[in-house]
Image: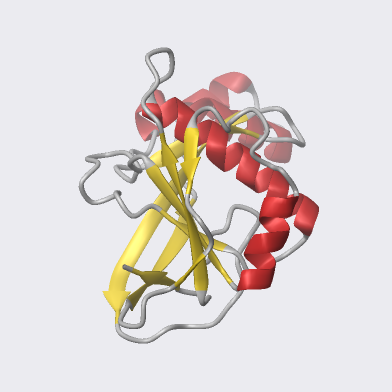
Length: 187
């Protein structure tokens, strides 16, 4: 993780920044999937000032080779008019580190009921009694709205920026550039 690229969303009168960020993360996911690499991480440098959303900047972290391969894929097709892409740059010398991870929340009572019916063969009424609408969990983390390539279902990808630490932790990143073990440079 010695290099990075910043992608800054440009203001657009037709699309909200949150909508553009969701589209950008979706395209990145496809690019990372096609590359089949687990050494590219992401962060959102403006997350703390953005108030309940991820801000207007997406930062890609990795080594020079991994980031160059990602850029060569041309995964930004359709987004180029909406983002300003920085040059590939070396991470500054004095940085701290942070884990950026996915948080999964079972927030949809209807989906939980369908799962209960399918797994336990109970009636819809019994499932509704076991899982009332009030069982929905709330999550105050920022998120992007995505659609599953496999099922076509829409879902919220909640993203947590962990505590800032002094030392890096090695690990791998998932197809969204998130990790429950590895850290990215934070600057």
